[in-house]
Image (cartoon, rainbow over the protein chains, first blue to last red):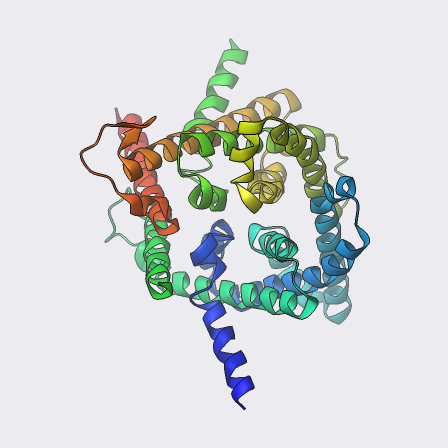
Length: 191
Length: 202
């Protein structure tokens, strides 16, 4: 029971005070784009989590095959190929399951595949040299943390873009300011 | 005459109205996380230029009949391959390599920047090639200039110094933090908008 609670608490800490958006800014541009259409937040978050987890798994095994220093220079290309494979497979599976869903969700699959949040997660995992379970856990935390961060921005996005905000700050600058304040809170909680 | 007008239009769009950092908010992570002074901003701008412009030029020759799904994989794959010689170049000099290594994962992350993954399809590759190259160049220059202005100002306000010489009677070290980067970028972005708006009115 204690171990379960500990895992749950560390997971909660990972998506809040260790959230990569607020501690490393990874995926901020995607987050702002995503907050504009909160209706598809869960689909978007699901795909980001899926891409992060499955690609982290593939890259873990791919990294094991690359030993020479020269070959390691091409690790980013290997990461892209792994991510590309997951991307294509996701589209094929979606198409097989439901053509209607495929049409409506295709755009979000495209947007969530090649962005800094997913690739950043793969790079951080690669740099850490952690074992597979830790990598998968981290990838899931990135995805869930992304959903949480997007939700926090999405609930206030309309206000940040409203007429009440001075024209120069309306929309993007106000969103950045808001993310900055959230990042400051997270920073304060960590120390 | 037309050439001049085209260049002026591309200049205005890439550097001012669609500035990727201040107006569109693209490629934010490296700017906010590691661009803390003039030098880090300059190195980041150089990596960005080398990877992005070369990739956009090479990928403009990818046939449009290839499906979008594969095209986008190809674009990022080309970017990751272009990144290899850029990485070797930046690792060759002692001082340069130190500044480059300080960028950490944010340097290779540039291979999925939105100029490569989105702007290519939504804008660049819909245009005639000579104008597209010019426009892409100005988009990259616009981002680089914004990055250098942002980094220099951030470093100056955070330390109160320029090249080690104390100029300001105060300093705001919090601006070196991630949240400081977000807040300063928000203020600069709003100021940029205000200036653009004032210019267009006058």
